[in-house]
Structure formats: C-alpha cells, structure tokens
Picture 1 (spheres, rainbow, N blue to C red):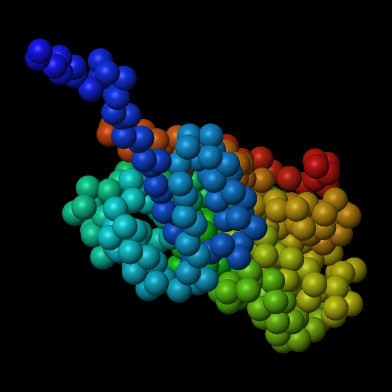
Picture 2 (cartoon, rainbow, N blue to C red):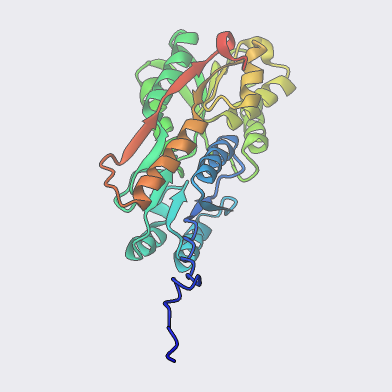
Length: 304
C-alpha cells in the first residue's frame, strides 16, 4: 500500500514567517549638555518608541570630528536613518558616506544642506530679531551691549548675525564685546567668568546697558556675574533664548534677566521623528527646512 505524502502545511507543520526587524535610527549630537538638545532628543525618543524604532543616542561631548566617525559607524551598522544635531558643513565626509550608502540623514536643529533630507528647527532669524529689538527698545536705543554668540553652530550663528544687524541699525548702540563661551559644560560657568572680566573692565555704573545672549546658558552666567559683582541695581537688561526652566525661573523673579524665546523643543523632536519616518518610507520631502513656532517669554508669562 502506498503511503500518502501530505504537504507540510496540510500536515500542520506550517513554517512561521520571519519576524520583521525593528527599524534602527542613530541620533548624533555634540551638544547633549544643552537643556534644549536634551528636550528634543527625549521627545524624538518618545515618539520613536511609539513607532517601534530602536534609537541609539550618541553624544560626542563637543567633539565635532567625532561626529563624522559616529556617522560612519552608523553606516557600517546599516541603520535605517541618521538624525544629526550639528553644523552640516563640519561633517560633510560623514554625510557623504551616509548618502553613498543610501541612508537618509535628517537635521534636528542642525542646518540645511544638500546631503540632509530636511532640517527641523526654530526660525532663528525671527527669534533673534524679536529679542534684539526688545533689548534696543528697553535701553531706548542707546548704550553698550555685550553679546554672547556661537558661530560654530548654524542655528545659533544665524541669531548672532541678525542681532548684529539690528544693533547696527541704532547709531547710539555700541556692541562692547562679542563673546563665544566654552560650551562643553553647558556654557554657564565660562560665560560667568567672561562676563566677570567685562564687568571688571567696565566698572562705572551704567557703562553696560544690556546683555544679549544667543541662548540661555550665557544669559544665566552673565546674571550670576552681575549679581556677584553687586551690580543688579544698574538696570542691566539681560535677554536669552530657549526659555529653559532655569531661565524661566530667573525671568519670573523680575530681575535683570527679562526675556527669552520659548522654542517648542518637544515639537522639534516630534517633527524630526515624523520627517524620519517619511524619509525611511522613501517619501519626497520638498522643503529643506521646517520651522516650529516660538514665543517671547517675559515675567508676564514665565510661570509654567
């Protein structure tokens, strides 16, 4: 008698389909010490978790050259996408490696570049214009202003350029100093030290009208220096950008630190995740830059 040979599927031995692997994304930044960076990286991770992605956050702690190596490592690991928070001009070799491998790179508060699919950020032009005009109006268009800038990072470099132009439009405003602080520890300590030096070189009451900072850490450092020097009563106006919790607290107290721009860091992180999803799905993203709205924060709205 012949034996009947049944297909495995009919015999109940169906083979299971292979499980789909989770999509992997590398997030690379040299600025994780900054509260703003921490906020949008966290928002990106939380959004990515709902999409089932595996996210590897890599902090190079201020080392720009290391960003290139970490991008190359991510390419070697065959990730599905890379998100960068760095000046594209400084990491072109890494971006080209990713492009050659067909791996999309998305900017999260980075800069626009042909090798980046799109950059999700705040409108630095508008933020700098609003804060620098605030300073000019508060000091009635005259006096010496200390600026804290950071030209090595495109979103912040833009702010300095715009503020330069605004202050130059007021003939009685003089930029006393244009300071680039060390940001490896976040920027507060070195900004305080540099502001202390400026105060010592300009000891006369009223010799400094305002401090304009391209982000909050230098503004907080300047505030500490002014307080330590006993010069809070001179009415030195301090304005920053980002409206991080420490800055909001200082603004709410109604002292020298008067205003900052609140960026929607959660919105940046979520928008970057959405752009990453679209890039991995091979969708065309026509806009090279996507702006997330900002709000001026003063004592009137500084409380959470």
